[in-house]
Structure formats: structure tokens, C-alpha cells
Image 1 (cartoon, rainbow over the protein chains, first blue to last red):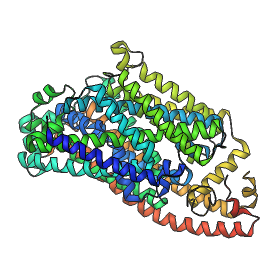
Image 2: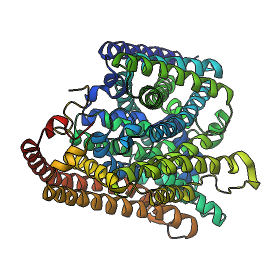
Image 3: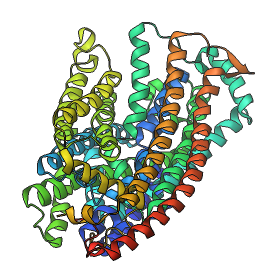
Image 4: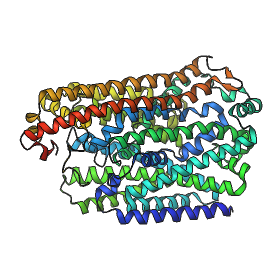
Length: 511
Length: 116
């Protein structure tokens, strides 16, 4: 038993519960619950996005992948800069100006139909639940490895905590936990890098000299594709990651929580800076673990390499630093999960219940109660799915989530915001068809069907993303919006361009 | 429910708003598309050529130099974009006061705000 880890864990859990308690007292309206009353500042949101985005898969998964496969393990982090430039220039401000609580609110600010709202809400729920299950399974395995707790118990502990944060503390508690996570993650990552480098070589050049010397030059070079298909798969993975990150609902709703347009931009830039710093540090963690701990010791502890960073911490800082890294991994997991629960429960309670089912007639109190109930139900469902799917391939779930975000959500949002001829018919048709086609393409791929798969690509993004855009386009050409559609686009353009400060008097229940 | 706004709006102002929106759109598209292209070139070059197999200087490989470059390039894009936004904000605020003036002279437009 690692006592420093257990004490740090207890402290972390106590601190997050205190935050939840304070946030719960301030959460009185649906706006507080979904978007923290639009009170979050730019840098605060930047740290929160960092905490939201960096999951256990990034912190432990990528550093482990670099430890075992060298440079080839790094690709999955490289989509981040592109994603944040797209978020900054194309999405941050319009989302802030158009969205109320959810992604469907953004889309229906142009096309207000119940069928499109329902389709958009379903997309959010599907993407977020896949992501959530991936986090749960990863977290369960991890906690099992770090503390020797049973998988089922580990999933239940995380699940109960995450549910409590969101049900009682809403977006405010989620934001605080994510900010704390962002800070802890960066401090711990850089502390580990400094420890590792002081043991290997203090300048980056000396560090890489040691890596090439001991692990061979092939560990720092992107390897040649063994087949044309493998190369296409790698390109597809890169593109789908970059565009998928820019289309993840739980990331995008963070842009609805900020005070104004300039805070929206600051959040994209600060998150891009902070996650970028983390991304630059990852190779030093991965290679550092391979050099100091050794590849065989890493694979002995976990075949997937997920324990590379904790083992590195134990090597350079003993039990105390191992405890710190384990507690960090735990916060990383709960912060991401809370964001996912907010996004998906908002789609269920605000979109499907308050708007589609109740046709906007639900009172504020009913909406808040629905939001909390939906958070409870979604969490419960995700816990049950995670317990049932223990042992499923994690990369498969993440691939599916990112491919759907890039092939359905991103074209839907970009066309809604920027394309004059986009129509309600096209939006609904595109959402339903692209959601089905992309899901089918991943399900019929090698992850589930093995070598003779119908779709030969593990990551079909390179096909499904252009296809997604095409489906939205075709649907809009076939069902044009007419003069009323053009007028709606004009109003939307005005709102995006001039901002919502003076325009939406009396629209929100927030000041 | 919102058609009153369209009637009240002044076509010259609408054209100016559209022009500013187009400027933002072009900037966003050009920056995103070129960065995405540069980024996509990395796995293509690494998979199918030997261009990135060598060392840049010392033991720092060309693969890593390319990969690391994505982060600062993204940050430089942020700076460009922030400068562009500053200019656009000034223009947008000017259009907003024109919009408010025309709305105030129009019929009961501001109260509805053109929104649901």
C-alpha cells in the first residue's frame, strides 16, 4: 500500500467535495447549472479547457505510447495546435454569441425545428457517452493497477463522485475542478520532466543524445509505413484527431460559459498555450521513462504502457512522487468525466426534454430538476455500460468519438455559422446520415472485425469527414431554405458579427 | 416572429455587416486550411518518404523538429488572429452603434432585439 498516494487521494476527494458544496449553493437556475451563469473569465476557462481536454488517455496513454514506440506514439498529440487554431478563428466567438446551454441551441438559433434539435442532441449524447465509457474503462483499469482496487469498485467510486459533482455543483463545480486539474497537471508534468532531465541530461540536446544513444535513432524518427494502407491510416488518424478535437461537444460547451467575445478568444488561446506546453513535455516523459525505468519494466507493469509516467515518478521521486502522479491521474479522469456528463445531460434535459418534449414550456425549476435528473441517469447508464464492456479496446471508443465529432458535429457547426445556403433539411439529413455512416464505418473496421474487415481503416476519418461535409451539402442543395432561410442567415450573421451584448436584451435569464 | 427586424434593417448597414463577416470568414478559412495542410504533411512525409528520417542537428531528429514546430506555429497563429480580431472588434462596435441607432429610429426593434 502506498500511503502517500492514499492520503493525497483523500485530500483531493475532500477538496473537490468542498468545491461541489460551495458551487451547489450558488447553483439556482438552469443557466447556473449548464453554463455557470456565464461568469467564467478567459484565462479561467483556458485552464478549465485544459482540464477538460487532457484525459487519462493523453496523460498516461500518450506518454506510455512514446515510451514503447518512440516518436510514433506522439502523433495523437499533434492535432492539438491545429484544433485550437480552428477553435479560435472559426468557433469560439460564434459559439459564445449563439449558444445558450448546448450545441443544439447553437444550431437551432438558425433553424428552430424540433427534429433538428433532437438529431443534434442525439449526436452530442452518442459522442459524449462513447468518450465517457472510454474514460471509465481507462480509469478503472488504472486505479486497479495503482491501488490494487477491484475494477468494479474503481468504476463505482469514480462514477459516484463524478455524479455528485455534476448533480449538485453543475458547471460551476465542474469548472473549478477542471481549473484545479489544469494547474496540477501542468505543475506535475513539468516537475516530472525536470526530474527526468536532471537524471538524463539537462539540456534538450543532451537528453536526445542519451535517447538516441541508448534507444537507437529509430526511436526519435517517424517510421515508414509498412504498407500504403498503414500510411493512409496514420494520415487519417492525424486529421480525425485535429478536426475531432474541434468538434467535441464537451469542449465546445466550455465556450458558452465565458463572459464575452474577448473572453471566448482568450480561452481558446490560453488553452492552446497550456495544452501545447503539456504536449511539448510529453516526449520527455515518454522517452525519460523508457531510459530510466526501461521498456520491459513498463510492459511488465501494464502491457499497454499506461503506467510509464507513474513508474517514472516512482523511479525519480519514490513513493511520494508516485502518489502525486496517481492523484493527478485521478483528478485528470474526474475532471474530464464531469465535463462529459454536463454536455450529455444538457442534451437530454435541455434539448430532448425541455425543448422537444415540453416545447419550451418547462419552468426554470422544472428545467433545473430535469438537468440534475438527466445527469444522474446518464452517469448511471455510463457506469453500467463501462462495467459491461470491461476489456473493450479503448482506442476504438476514442476513435469513434473523434470521428463522429469531426464528421458530424464539425460540419454541422461550420455550415450553420458560415454557409448561406445551408438549410434545415440539409442539417437534419446530414446529421442523421453522417452519424449512421460514420458509426457503421468504425463498427465494420478492423477493431471489431479483425483483418478481413469490410472497412480496412482503423480510423476511417479520412473518408467519413469529407463524406460528412458532402452529405450536409447535398441535403441543403436538394432542400433549399428559400427567402426565409436567407433572412435567418442574415440575422445570424448580424448576431455573430456584432456580438450579443446589446442584441439579446431579454433573451437570457442571465445578466 | 422575427420578420419585423428584416423590415426595419437598413440595406447599407446589412451590406457592411456582411462585408465584415466575409473578412472574418476568409481569414479563418485561410489560416485553418493552411495550418491543417502543413500539419497533414508530417504523417505523409514520415510514412512515404525518407525526408524526415535524418537528424536536424545533433540527436534532434527532423521528425521531432517538424512535430515540435506545430506548437509555436499555432501560437504565432494566435498572435496574428488576436491582431486581426482587434481591428475587427473596432469595426464591429462601429457597426453595432449604427445598428442600435437605426433600430432606435425603427419601430420597437430593440425591445425585441430581433430574437426569440
